[in-house]
Structure formats: structure tokens, C-alpha cells
Image 1 (spheres, rainbow, N blue to C red):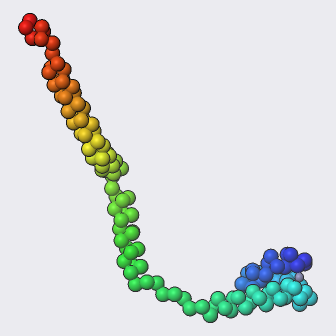
Image 2 (cartoon, rainbow, N blue to C red; image 1 turned 90 degrees about the vertical axis):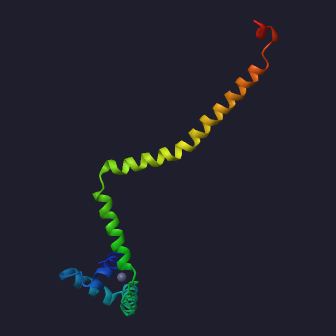
Image 3 (cartoon, helix red, strand yellow; image 1 turned 45 degrees about the horizontal axis):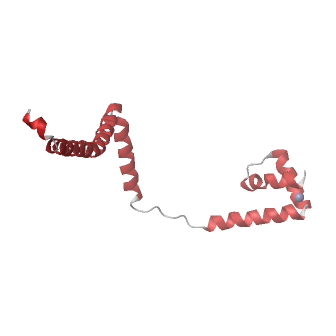
Length: 129
Ligand SMILES: [Zn+2]
């Protein structure tokens, strides 16, 4: 077995996921190869260090946040497809109505002023007729 093959399988070997003949080959290679045995020793040390780490406790509000998220997702799944669409259309119309109203109002004011100006400059002979 080559060093490359052995190093690729070291993690599995460490976890005990390698059995039978392959396990024997790796063990034989580790006994004969300093480079691979050093890497294996390093992996063992990392595994021991990780095992010494304490498990962090979940924050107390995590349960509540998960329940809220689940209930929101359940409510979203229960909502009819067209219900969400009607809300979106209503919101779009509300955001569109203010500029449209302002545009119509400004057009009325502009044409009102234009008509008032035209009427005030009417020629005199037209008024006599
Ligand atoms: Zn080796």
C-alpha cells in the first residue's frame, strides 16, 4: 500500500470504518512508515482534542423561535394560492395609486390652466360675433 492510499484512508481507519484485510494493510503500513504514522498520530490527537470540547447548550429562546418558524411555515402552506396573489395585487395597486392620482391631478390642473389662458386671450372680434 502506498503512502497516498494510506493517508486517504487514515480518517476511516481512525473512525474504525475500515475492516478486514484493508485494516491490516493500513496497520502494517503505519508500522513501517514514519510519515504516515506521524500523520495518524496527529489525527488521533485532533480526535482527542475534539472529544474534550464541551457541547454548547442551545439558547433557551431557540425552541420558541423554531416553533414560531414552524407555525408560520404551516400557515403559509395552508394559505390558498390565490389568497397571497390578491394581497400582492392589492399592495401593488396601493403603491401604484398614489403616483397615478398625482399624475391625473397634475394633468387636470395643467389643462385647466391652459384652457383658462386660452379663454383670457380671446380676440375682441370673436367676442362681438
Ligand atoms: Zn506512508
